[in-house]
Image: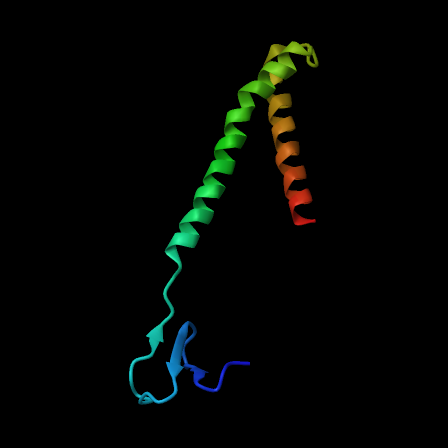
Length: 94
């Protein structure tokens, strides 16, 4: 429940303070750009880490002789990368 001196305005994201004229323009809630840009930077770094690990997975799959045809190495390396991302998402949720 909101405090007695603050009432929600008709539009979402706007707050009207008691004591002001009801016809006065409501003050909009500012967007926290610093927090949003920090979260965006973290998400971009995670994507960069996923892309950077792919050459190492390619080398690992090719050196372990998992596949007979060299053309299939990229498929199995990508499969490992997808499974890594999938399980990261599962364990982050829990």
